[in-house]
Image (cartoon, rainbow, N blue to C red):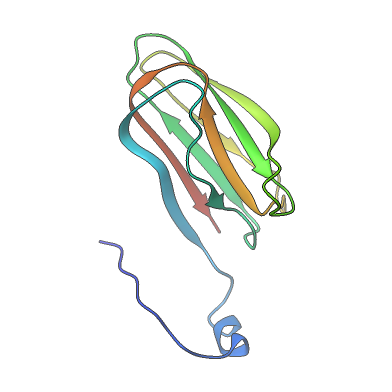
Length: 120
């Protein structure tokens, strides 16, 4: 069970613990509507990134991955991922790829959708 808390220290102490890593979901087992973007999710500060898509719709579902390079609210298309019916697909970002924020926009309605990001 993941836990979180606050730690008040200086930045030099944090780097002694090693590079940051993390994971989280844009959606977990949710029904989603076409053309309604996910909430933005932090992307900056991690070297290795992967995104996983899974859904239980009876048809292929396309997801637009959009990025905000500078953190100024200007979204740009990164790539479209097509996930087969009742399927799963993942995408590995190039090592060191950097943007401030990421979001996903489904191009069709879908049920039981999970989109998860893992950062190392």
